[in-house]
Amino acid sequence: MERAWWKEAIVYEIYPRSFMDSDGDGVGDLRGIISRLDYLKELGIDVIWLAPVYQSPNDDNGYDISDYQAIMKEFGTMEDFDEMLEGIHARGMRLVMDLVVNHTSDEHAWFVESRSSKTNPYRDYYFWREGKDGREPNNWGSCFSGSAWKYDETTDMYFLHVFSKKQPDLNWDNPKVREDVFSMMNWWCEKGIDGFRMDVISFISKEEGLPDGPKFPGALHGFPRCVNGPHVHEYLQEMNREVLSKYDLMTVGECSGVTIEEAKKYARADGKELSMVFQFEHVGLDDGKFGKWTDRRMELKGFREVMSKWQTELEGKAWNSLFLGNHDQPRSISRFGNDDPRYREVCAKMLATCIHMMQGTPYLYQGEELGMTNCPFETLEELRDIESINAFHELTESGKIDPEDMMRYINLRGRDNARTPMQWDDSANAGFTTGTPWIKVNPNYTKINAMAQQKDPNSVFHYYQKLHRLRKEEDVIVYGKYQLLEPESESLYVYTRTLEKDKLLVICNFTDQEVSYRIPEEFSNGRILIGNLREEGTSAEETVQLKPYEAIVLKVVQE
Ligand code: GLC
Image 1: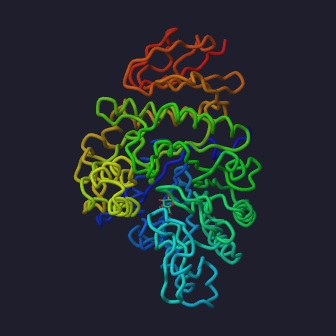
Image 2: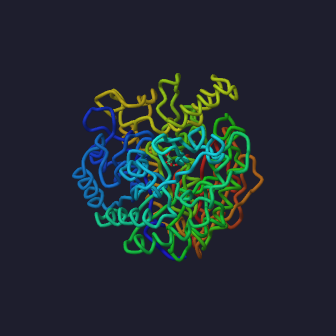
Image 3: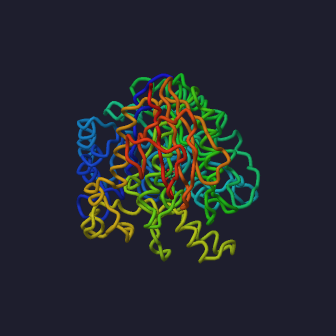
């Protein structure tokens, strides 16, 4: 397997609105990030993925961009950005920017022009269609509820928005759109950034003629018509020629709906498209009839099967990305683990071990290194996320879900869980702001915060630090081959990693019960490389008795 810096890197996602506020307006900003760069360095991460900081009316917290080459006023200035980039590089870290080019804001100059008349030169930058029998042009639904089309009086036509009404989809079939996007990307690369995380990039090529999608209950009828479309690989290869290949970048495509076969194309090993993709199969396993709005829990069996499939099938062909949480997902400890105070810390470490020992580039979402949990939201007024708010109205007003149940589902699965302010210390507002935070602070910040964990050598923070150090020391963690053991176990996730003579055995107990496990013969002389309850360097018994949520990594000692 070919080596690459981005295969060996640990990535940390910053959601700037909630990371650190420097000026007391209740909204995180770039100077806030600058003030916490030493913290990130101490944690041992290599790359920061920065969620959008571009100018935006914030219908979807910056994923609706009105100027790609300006910084959002609330976040600071371009000078702040340059200083932040310099500070990141000075500490030996790199910066990956969010690239949101499936759509713009409706306040972007291209759309303002496009909307103004049927003959405007920018008309074809977006999808404009006539209505059909007094209705929308097709049956596609928006990811944020309702139809994916909005009627516009100016020219008596509809425009397509797969996300919110303020996020019109760009028409990538128009070569001028591609040219403008590529030149904007080159501009950022010339500034010295180190890569892009490409927002919903699997959506940029729509099926020709925009035909109706197959109907299935509670889902977006248009989804299969929008993802992995006929020209997506052609456009990404063009992007690679025009931009990516000219710089030393790390790129990751957010690819909902991606299959293994598709991933092999997006992240092809010859580097003609992207470095890697985010796949979402493991975070769709707990979906129900109404998609994510359910109280279903993920089962170990399904999780293990999906993770193992991606590990084995991409081996040598394309590179994996590893994540349990991000700004669109609930907190990983609450969802995959157990956030009960009795188990929270040990369980957060177990989940970290399970993911970080796999093949691929690990992504950590801000606060995950502290074991931050979901936040109790009591009323609709406390919510900020357009997705949850719209879904609440759509599903309760149509009588499909009872309001109380819906609130419970939002508490389990809503995106605001990940967006509450970073918990820095036990002072007011968790040390995030001296003002009024834009979204509520999780009340558990007095117990769970960075300052307390930095002081405690047994904290989740320090455990992540160790994992990060190990990845630098042990090639087998990065490049080793994965093999699943115990595929039928009800409680354990067990796998091995092998790189020539180096061999690791990873055992994770996913339950709150004690479980015994007989160590396979070839690991009998193994020593603990890392464990959340055992001391490093010690050996294990022939049959280990794993405590609730215990994780053990054994490394074979070479004779
Ligand atoms: C991606 C982003 C999400 C955003 C959506 C539309 O899924 O991660 O936050 O709402 O794209 O841009």
